[in-house]
Length: 581
Ligand code: GTP
Ligand code: SPV
Ligand code: MN
Image (cartoon, rainbow, N blue to C red):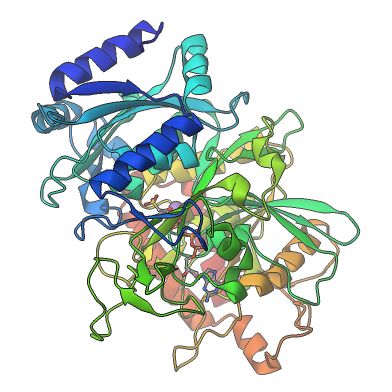
């Protein structure tokens, strides 16, 4: 196969000459192609069959034990000037990065097949969608891209019609953790990834394209590419709201996006538009509209059970790829937090030996097509996207951040987003549980200088007449014994209900210097066993602790020197003044 797009054909020829694969396969995205690749990987041992009676078409992939998460320290943004990548990114000059990557790609596909994957991020007929082509030597990448993006013939047609696309070159190399680089060339619309076969490092449509490259384009073109879920909430009266929420990796987006209402919430319906990424544009009515560029989920497995997320639990019982879970004696997938079965073989393929180590890797993942989600909304396929009523920021914080508060206005909301901090998780290599700044949950994903990004966010007051309200939530407050204070999961709808009531001006709030908080009794706790004292501590503002927090935010902003928007610093000072008054 080949293409009528000369730029694409020439690039494929160049890449083939550099990497020297045995053969080249253009992927059409068909079911037959998917099946064929699964069979090949079963034969090669890349995939293992799980119990086909209880889990039809479910397979297990064990990645290299040194290749189980994103590698932020090896991820680079290669702009001409270092300041354009900003202190939030690792930087290398494009010329140096190209020289280094060319050296690594030289001959790296000998003895392997090179797959060419045309893909479209966003509904195929949406004006907001953008295309790319990923070239890879990993069949695991192809099947994952098949489940998670609109890939194949239709995407290639769109590329041939439109002309422009993002070029992504990927090779697993030798999976050597010392020879692993994820490079972004935003000015060239190029991504080059070498040495990892895992998730965000290798599925280039996801974090590399739909966030790092797209955020860079979005700044120039006046829109936003964000690490956000998109969810529809419908009340028993049939009132619908669309909410977008940005939480850092492994901090609850998938779970909130497919939430099942509590028993007392008769008639409420929650539907999923997206679970990880949102592209937001200002529409003709001056509202923000969101599309989900993906068409599948690469979700965290541990913690998924019938109580926490029955939708996900059902969704991954067929046609799913599991990466790095354990298995039971019956060859069923098993993970920490699953409420049945016993693991006998851990994620590395070893017999469980009672050492107490986790049987499934804490960042083990499922890959499934979105349409398999029991709460899937067909609006995920709507080329126009959905209008957003509220933007919600959140993080994983034992202390300080209340269960929920509302920003005073958009400018203050941008400060709230820019100040997000969260405990690190297993989604990225490195220490877990360290609190760090993760502005807008985009620390690992913003393709340019954060200071300019905050300025871009602030510019929306001039771009859009009917901006959504901005909120902050924290499901992860703990008591002294490390127990979560808030039940979370389905009960988070109680908080979303307050958020919606605020959007509709149906409920008053307590004005504090950090924002509007719910009045006593306004978060519905009917049916919960939570006591008033716990609710009060979840909704209190500790002045001294917040003053220290805003001082820490000031220190953080200093890293960005004079690029920090004056307005953002003014918002910070406004809160400090309020706290001191
Ligand atoms: P990425 O895919 O890495 O971007 O993560 P995500 O934000 O989609 O996170 P996800 O929903 O997969 O949740 C990650 C972990 O947090 C899982 O182990 C969940 O069980 C847990 N979790 C999600 N929501 C809640 C909650 O409301 N309360 C508590 N305590 N844990 C939660
Ligand atoms: C995340 O880490 O935020 C993920 C998983 O959603 S990955 O695709 O690896 O980026
Ligand atoms: Mn994510």
